[in-house]
Amino acid sequence: MNREDRRAISREYFSRDRLAEHHFRSFNNFLDRGMQRVVDEKEAIETDIGDKEGQEPVRVDLGNVRIVTPRVREADGSEELLYPQEARLRNITYSAPVFMEMNIVRGGEEAEEHIVDQSETKVGRMPIMVGSHKCNINGFTREELIEIGEDPADPGGYFIVNGSERVLMTSEDLAPNKILAEYDSKYGDEIQIAKTFSQRRGYRALVLCERNRSGILEVSFPSVSGSINFVTLVRALGLESDEEIVHRVSDDPEIVKFMLENLEAAEVQSTAEAIEALGQRVASGQGKNYQLKRANYVIDRYLLPHLHEEGVEDEEVRMNKAVYLCRMAEACFELALARREADDKDHYANKRLKVSGDLMKDLFRTALNKLSRDVKYQLERANMRNRQLSVNTVVRSDVLTERLEHPIATGNWVGGRSGVSQLVDRTDYMGVLSHLRRLRSPLSRSQPHFEARDLHATQWGRICPSETPEGPNCGLVKNFAQAMELSQNVDDERGLKRELASMGVEGIPGIETVETHTADD
Image 1 (cartoon, helix red, strand yellow):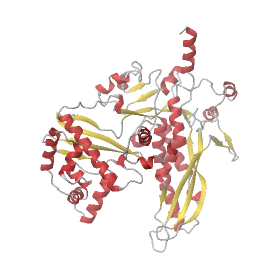
Image 2: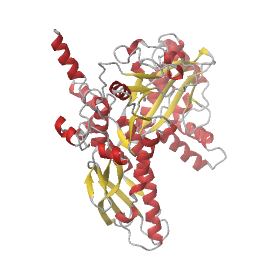
Image 3: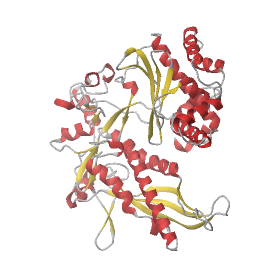
Image 4: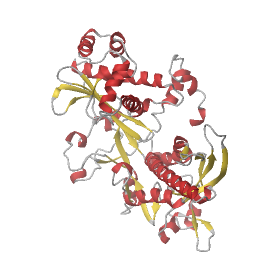
């Protein structure tokens, strides 16, 4: 390859499309599919209207959501197209109106339902990434960009909020819904732990399965203080007989011996007894009926939430949870028998990166919940005053707008994270490119974290080995390697099931329903 060929390849690689491509792809995917999925999760806004006798219940059904290109409302009330340079010069936000279909429905299960009011209304404004497919300069030629005062070499990939350029930092995180086995940090290899970060619809629950010094397995998960005996929990989920529990964990003779110790130490022998024991833990001092109700609610809602599937029976979901816990137990026993090594948290196969679209999805979900609470309040207030219920009067668009713009402007994200958005480094052109390709670890800067800061072998070809800051951020703030390509949506379980089915694999759970959902591809 001669010098001219190398120069052509280099020029093509360092084009404005390539260097911030991971931001564009992620944000465009959020606009095309992510926003609608968040709205579909919410589905409807329930109200307290109808709780009193003589009143029909009222709810708001949410439909399609769409977003247009950035516009600015002038003093005379007219709306004009907004370009990034104008937003910078006027110190305004480069954002676009968001419209959503909303139907106010009166009536419920007993009464016949009828629509009181329906319309597509403006619910707020969303900041738009410069260079994304909803950006007004997308597709412009070099000459057209120069004509409107834009820099044709600008890579884009950032937002403009109140005139300031803000880039969302790609964030490292441990892979969700994956079993990681390790030894206890305090007691060494005497105690083995299998853990998973179960994640669904923005909710993240840490589930731990621990084998203590006595060889007894205990499970801990959110909303339950302390830990619960493993056998008690799997029996509550529907695995009742000793033989079935042992078979689900492993058929290996040494692991079976460990499991027999756990079964001998078990306090309950049936599913009913197990749920009763769990109820006494989660609602001690309450009536028996409430305890049973609360126990069922806790294991359905807070235990391994990622195993919930739409349209799947509760019994099947519980059985899936029991089997998953048995896999976690097997991982603990294999670690105790030295059949496997402890999982390396710094290995890049055990990590996932949250890019702009993922971060905006978390933000939009929180903003939509805030808007839902406000719409509920406005509807109940209008109903108390005997006013006509109308979509346009109950939706205050500044509620959603504020919740979307403020975190990008300050960097204080949902979940208590800070520094997620930063001012674009405009020292020079290479500084901009470096900032767009930077990623940060959520670990505390004040702690040593020697292993997390070290250069790991799996970072080869992915992470630049030399570009990292001095001082407390060393090794925690990193940069992508020059020729790195970021794959996306690799955790698409539905797509994976379809792929397996196309290869001739039979008996995949939920495959009948999966094949009909091709719209999500």
